[in-house]
Length: 165
Picture 1 (cartoon, rainbow, N blue to C red):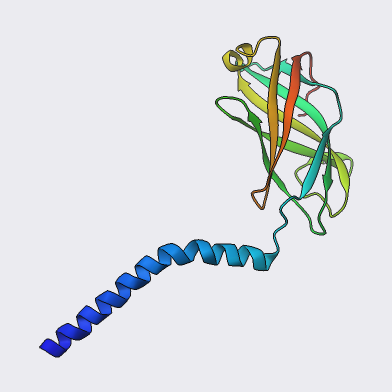
Picture 2 (cartoon, rainbow, N blue to C red):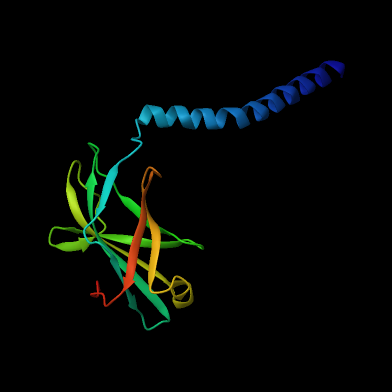
């Protein structure tokens, strides 16, 4: 009986050590796997096509903020922009429609190519009105590697927008 107890206590000790080390090893293993995949730290550059974006009104009580951008993939592999965030409080998530193949789509950006993209955000009227005549905020592009490209202090002014749909 004592031999069985010693084996059980040894097994419990080993499992406890594995559980403790797993908490330390998991982040280290993620970092190593990210380095092995050679995930680029920056994947795109974004330059506004216009001096300021526009704000249009929707029927559902929200406003649409929109702006044209010139987006360039700086890597040697396709890059997908998962979403765009507007740096206001609370944050507003938007989308990018890329102008490729004579249509607007969410295709990945081809390697080393520049395309025009339309960025759109929908926010409640109250939140937009709190900013006054124009909404000034950072625009944050997020790609599939969770890289964030922040373009600071972009201005969206009240004017009519063309409809994307």
